Image 1: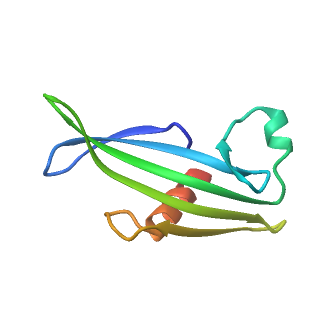
Image 2: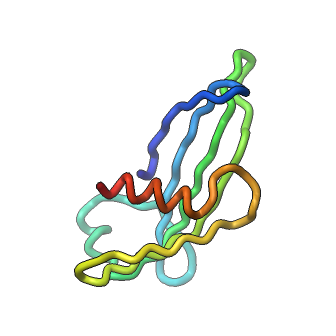
Length: 109
């Protein structure tokens, strides 16, 4: 889902939504997620991520930042099942932790 961009329309106008995903690195910070085999082989059965969603209103005069959502995610691979814990940073906006979990479920199917 990292780097995914979609457009959607509301009563206000046309929006662009961008997603960025970072993974915890060395227990000291986060780095951008990659898909190369060396990077993937270093991921254990438990991983922590930041998941950022940026919405931008697209107008004739230019782009206007509309909303930014940040979530902390922990994924635990339990063999036969995967557990996902989501915490939202802040409480404003239209997207909440349950919405993000549903988005992630849809991406995994």
